[in-house]
Length: 140
Image 1: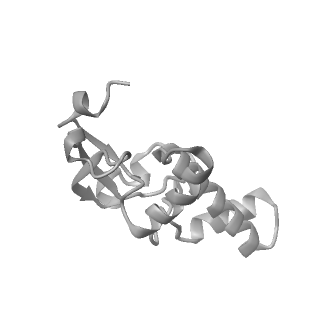
Image 2 (image 1 turned 90 degrees about the vertical axis):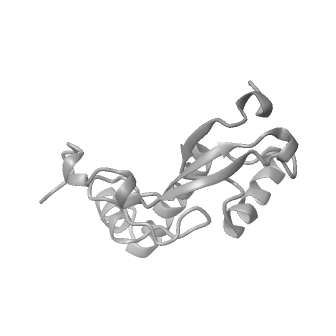
């Protein structure tokens, strides 16, 4: 790993950061208690996706994959990571994307304090429309 000082000033995009909101901080505290460090975006996204799937199973009352998938598309995603986020017809979650700048280690308030948020881009602006995705699941 390069380290925070070497990366200071680097700009990146990411839809999740453990210190983004009170909900992400609370979930991260539970995650870090077991894993010894905060989650990556991929770890948080996988947990969120599994939770959304389980909620769709409960709401649909079945384990039938097609029925559950339809329910997942109908339900907005609401959890520690997402606030009422819709799933596109191609199955892509239209996450808000954040632009972050890596802060110098001297500016960090604690061990895992890496980023300053520069801007946020709503999901419907950050991603092309599902119709332009080329996905065969998209129907007019």
